[in-house]
Image (cartoon, rainbow, N blue to C red; front, side):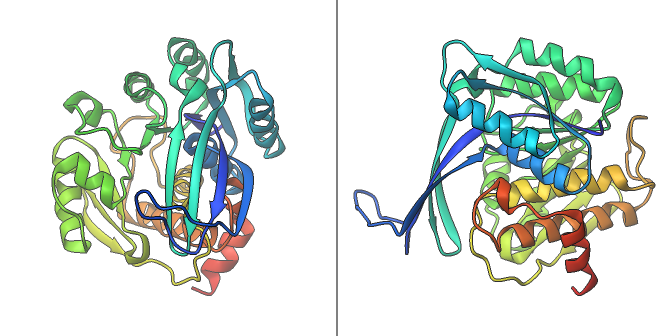
Length: 319
């Protein structure tokens, strides 16, 4: 097992509309589907389809949604032995409204809100076999912080997607994060800097790097992304594609990034920081992650939209 994911699993209830509704407005949707999601599970699937061996640690409800969420991960060859069942809460759900090039999401945590000491104990049993830990903020923040500290101490590379953002990060937490990947909105909430373009994104990323995060990558959608790390600042343009559904673009990026880092022979995994021997390995991983996200947004859904390694490599060969 290379990649360990501690995070959320949700059943996504997705309505498609011509445009997003205004406050108080009722719109008629064009379609409705129920699909497995949750930022943790989405990232696990993205990493698995990119060729990594993945284990998922989390919690679902004792209900039909929970059974479906577990089965979907197992179908992707993801280890679900540390996926627990809540005795009091239903599986997490996400109410998603999708319009062309935009979306709105309301998450109801359910069993995800109970992820805590039991899951942390299970996490510890995996640490000696893992290289990367993927974390997000759809489970209790205290659990995320404890997990980052445990993984950092064990020498894992810790990738944190601070979504949904919950205010500024503590100094100790920052120092346990190897790679932080906020989007524009999350970067602004974390730093107080309005992020509108590459220049302002660089300022925000620099701010987070100065707080102790080794590598900061701010995702800017159609503008691409910017990376600030000890070696310098790098900008990456987005691949031009016809977007159909942007719901899981960030999850696709993170899962792809983790898989690309694991496959690189120039990354110091399991031996402490700094993790990247040179900028080339980091740049290559970010380019791969950008391609995973680009392909994902050309398809509907979350986990089902994640591309395979073969698809990503074919895309990169002509872009």
